[in-house]
Amino acid sequence: MTQTVQLPIAVDTDLYVGGKHVSASDAGRFDVLDPSTGQPLASVADGTVEDALAAVAAAHEAGPRWAAVPPRERAEILRAAFDAMNAKAEALAELISLENGKALRDARGEVAYAAEFFRWYSEEAVRNLGSVTTSPSGSNQIVVLRQPVGVCVLVTPWNFPAAMATRKIGPALAAGCTVVLKPASDTPLTALAIAQILADAGVPPGVVNVLPARRSGSVVSAMLHDDRVRKISFTGSTEVGRVLLREASDKIVNASMELGGNAPFIVFADADLDAAVDGAMIAKMRNAGEACTAANRFYVESSVAQEFSKQFAERMAVLTVGPGIDPETEVGPLVNTETVDKVDRLVQGATAAGASIVVGGNRPERAGFFYEPTVLVNVAPDSPILGDEIFGPVAPIVTFESEDEAVERANDTPYGLVSYVYTGDLARGLRVGARLESGMVGLNRGLVSDPAAPFGGVKQSGIGREGGHEGMLDYTESKYIALQW
Ligand code: NAP
Ligand code: MG
Image (cartoon, rainbow, N blue to C red; front, side, top):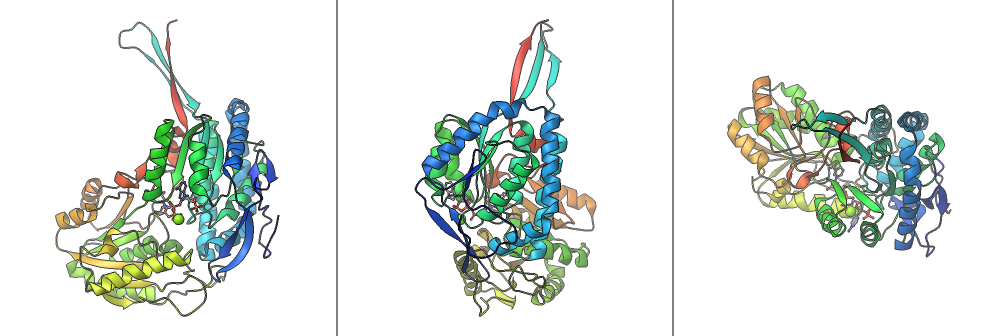
């Protein structure tokens, strides 16, 4: 276990397999960088295919015993994990902020959100409802049990290193499944810290295994081709999701996919403009725009577009940009240099096509992976910045004239994760909400994420739902017994 700087929370940086911390089979390691400086924070064991199969073996071995643990006991363990996570909330927030870059205030919000998945699924664990009905012929009973799907491979992104892990681990454990978590290589430290929290809460060895691995393609592929693996739950880009769906098809592995988004944020002229600007700040700037739910395209009715853009730009201009770990910071750095390059390219493409910059539009002159909060107006409707996931602090604004035009533009994307609508007319809000092709809608609200609600997308934003009652169903199979008494 090598450590480069003192971390806010003790993290064992080896692989976590079968309840033990072990080096990679080839002794390989890789560096985790601090995005606010570009300097190494820690070095982490780099899991190999051999390690991945050992983790699958550990999860497989632990499976039947974990599934047989009474639901109440599984619930108590998850509840203890909720308490343990909250007890370490501040240190965990600092760790997230250090390895991901996000402002400490965003990291604190993430820890609270992440811990809630353990509490919610501790409550769901004892409500794994099946059903008994009478066959229409009257000849027998139809008994449906909800059984754990089995060993699950969980692959998570870097933008919410804690919440994307707990949103999968919570329901999986509640349902009686065991897991191998492959965290993003940019942010494996938080996942390893969570493994320790779960162990302290009483999760038995082998139930949760954590496998940082930079060779993510070969490692995940090997697991998907192992007969002991029954499910993959992936959160990340649509591009990688497509690859994993193809890989999962070989062994017909159950797949849940939370993929990219391209959220429209629609403001009608009858909206409370102050509320719309507040909502825009949250929908755009939470995590510096690095959220799959981030508002990516602003469509504002032309009669209020100037006023909305002015107020929004004023708020964006005064945000404090700095290292996430600094308590004054409101906008931290982006996760890596490629992300900054992409954001910059999109802004330059938009301005080349005629958009004007109201505020921002530059990389600040400083070390680390920073980009200024940016508002663009007069954005051409076919500009690439409206079609691509920006994943940064940039808000392109487009005007519209009618409800139909707003809905058509909003739906003109292969993605469908979330949409935001601001209007003072609730009937209109619900009508438009129903017409929008997305799995979720924020109506007069800039934040939809809630552990008690089914989170997920339609179209190329994914398959399946996480959170809510639905979230645990995704980790179960229906077992139907035709019963004659
Ligand atoms: P990504 O490149 O797709 O990576 C996500 C995870 O997949 C990481 O753990 C990554 O590991 C792994 N991975 C990469 N290539 C792989 C491959 N060929 N086979 C198996 N695993 C592979 O996504 P990202 O850039 O980290 O995250 C941003 C994306 O996630 C955005 O598109 C965002 O919208 C999406 N996202 C979606 C949701 C949602 O709920 N819908 C939530 C958050 C984020 P390495 O880090 O080792 O490459
Ligand atoms: Mg990536």
